[in-house]
Image 1 (cartoon, rainbow, N blue to C red):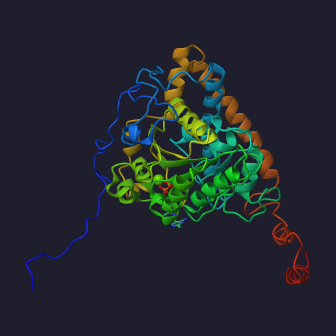
Image 2: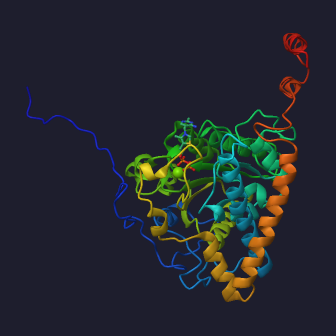
Image 3: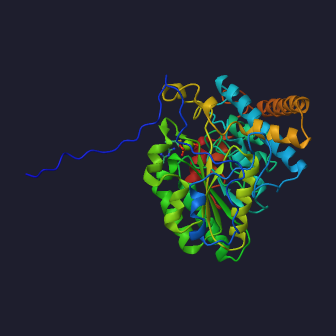
Length: 410
Ligand SMILES: Cc1ncc(C[n+]2csc(CCOP(=O)(O)OP(=O)(O)O)c2C)c(N)n1
Ligand SMILES: [Mg+2]
């Protein structure tokens, strides 16, 4: 016998549940421009604070302020705006297509467009992303044909992946977009391995790993950080903290660390938090991290603070686990509206121009969709050939597969 009380576990709970008033008082937001910009070769010990703050460039008035501002030209920012608007329009059309039964599944980026679109600009040709399913902006911002993306979503006769992947799990070596795996976090170790291989070959190409807040709870995440830290691999370790992992709030995977960025500190990896809804801040931080990797200074961990405004996927109903108005209460706003306000202040955008761009983009997305649908959708028209499933795995087809192909008569 002893005097101890029975042990209990601590199970974190989200601040509010459906029916409650949204509460983001736990998200401490510094003023835009307030966080210093260290040299890329700063001693990691001296910049630990960056893991607990939020780097922001665009202020409430839409001005770009502080030491992380001033890196992009008017033309580049307008291009960024169009990329984000294209991604949002693409998402909206594919969501409807899923409801119409033209595809089985879709995942949208609503509210997170700035992250993948701005990050892509900081990379060079040959660099490789190891993305999750919520970074299609990497493809859009690199000029990957939208028709090919749609054909993948429809699993039709022109699907570049021949029906082998779940919709939205794209792959394009040429566009620096490694094949997406549905097994969360596996891409994190692969990214670090790819980066190490690049260094072993004395190449100059760098890698970018991507993961969601929830998936950082996977052991692959931690294994990747060990290798990246020990060998100073040329990799950018991105964590997209969109507050939710399907119905699980970020407090579960975050644990006691305070922030996701703080995870990097125990590995001696410079770790930054950035406003994920601020196109300029995302670009500035990505550029800083890319320079570190390219100058052989090693990995950088970046936490993008954002909010998943849409459902997790077309199979999810967020009203079951969070207040309906929560996304309106998100204090970092909407990335498209924020960049729009900034462009208006710079004198290179206007309400009319915005409406015109929306109409043009919608026209081009609809045109791409018409073309993609002419090659088939889930239940109608062309499909990948059954013969395709025997191709592309072995350099020379083994006899047992040849026999199976003959039996299938394809
Ligand atoms: C290893 C593994 N476990 C669970 C799942 C099921 N699953 C798919 S997405 C997801 C949530 C991931 O949340 P997060 O990492 O925050 O990314 P987000 O969807 O918010 O972008 C889960 C649990 C899976 N695909 N793989
Ligand atoms: Mg998440």
